[in-house]
Image (cartoon, rainbow, N blue to C red; front, side, top):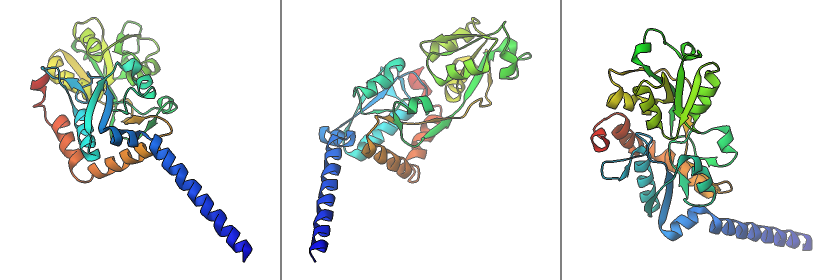
Length: 270
C-alpha cells in the first residue's frame, strides 16, 4: 500500500514538474511573445519579385507579404514588416530583430544548421537568361561553360551556389541585387544570368522580351521555407499547421493566383 502511494506521489510530482517546464517553455517562446505584444514582426528583403518588392509609392507588396498579412490576421495581431539586407538577414533573425524570416529563402542544409524551417510553402528552380545573340550557340548550361562567357547572379544566394557548381570555366560575377545582375546581361556586359525562375520570367515580361532568351528549364530543385530561431517548437508547430490549413481552404490558392497567375500587379511596380 505504501509502495503504491509512493509511486502515485512520484508520478504526480513528475507530472507537475513536466507541466511547469512546459509552462516555462511557453513563456519563453516567440509565439507567446507575438501574442503578448500583439504584433508579428516579419523580416524580408524587398526586391525579389513577386515574393516581396516595393510599389511605386514605396509600399512593400508581394506573395510573401500577403501570406504574412493573413498569418497575422489568423494570430489576431498586427503585422510589422522589417526590411533587411539579404547578407544580414539570418543574423538579424538570430538576434531577434524580427520574429520570422519570410523572404523567398531556399531551404538548404547549411542554412538549416543555423535556423529551423517550417514546411516548404513553394518550390522554385534556377534558370538562365542569355543574350539574344547567343540563341544559336547556347542551348543549355553546359554550352555556357566556356572561358569566353561571363555568367552573373546575386551575391550569397542559391543562384551563386549553382553558378559555382555548374560553371568551372566560365567567368562568374556577383552583384548585390538581382536587378543589377539582370541589367548587366541586358546591357550586353555579361552573357547570361542564373537566378530563380519566377524572377527571370517576370523580368522577361517586363524588360527582357525581344532582347534576351529565357532558358526556362529548371536546373535545380529549391523548396522555399519560412525560417525561425532554433529551440522554438511552438512557433514552428503553429506555422506548419497554418500552412496545412490555408493550402486546403482556398486561402493559399487565392494568394498564389494573384501573384503567379496574373500580371496585373506589374502596373504597381513599373
